[in-house]
Amino acid sequence: MIEVDFDSQSQNDVITKKMSQLLLKGWAMLSETCSKCSEVPLMRSRDGTSLCCKCSSMTNPQPTKQNEDSNGQNLTTCKLDSYKTFGQIPLNAKELSSIHEGNAKTISLPSTKPVEHPVF
Image 1: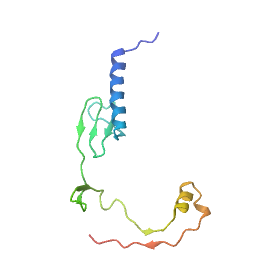
Image 2: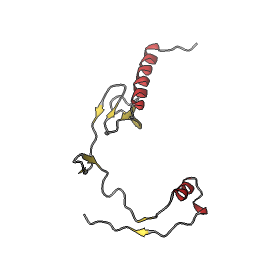
Image 3: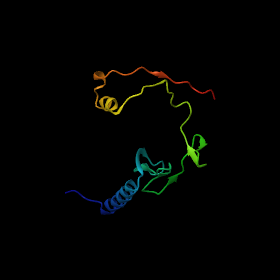
Image 4: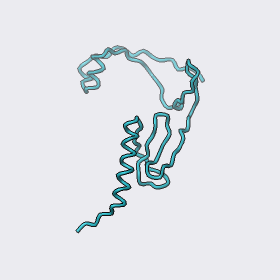
């Protein structure tokens, strides 16, 4: 006979309900677990705040660089060295769809335009 820990099951239901409510509000479930209780996946809001639904531990986002957009609002951007563009290929919707469907060999790609990198 299997013994069921109803208190544990009830707590799991509460955690699952809290996680599902956050997902419906636009939060993302991360593959990382909480550093305090290490049992539940962390949830991340759109602003980067992480939350553990079991122990309610919260962490604030750690911005890498602050910029201001044209409206004067602060924006968090990735590190400057993370991505580099080497060229641009002008494609239409049909060509893009073909690439995403895995049929890139059936289209002829136009020439690549080199991109100049600004000096920082």
